[in-house]
Amino acid sequence: MGTPDTRQKSSAAFLVQAAISFGVSFIATTAGVVYLPLDMWQRGFLLISELFLVSSAFTLAKVVRDQHEATRVNHRVDEARLEKLLAEHDPFKA
Image (cartoon, rainbow, N blue to C red):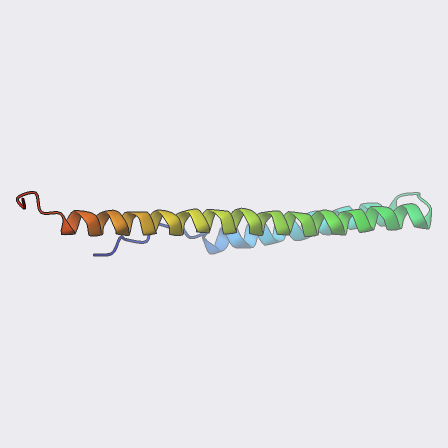
């Protein structure tokens, strides 16, 4: 007796929109840093900061996803245990 998978899948349009918006924002920020009237070391600092920010955002997204999946698995295990206990319980037994 399995429970139906109720996870919502992202549509292809949402995936494309998210990828395009990420690409546009990354390119626009990089272009802005490159064309700012700054010294080379200042421009380099901003570019390294931008790359670190992107890397941190991906890491945070992965951690949040992993925690969500872990709680979902724990919830499924708890439900399975409860179903097993209810199936084995006979109220008319002494």
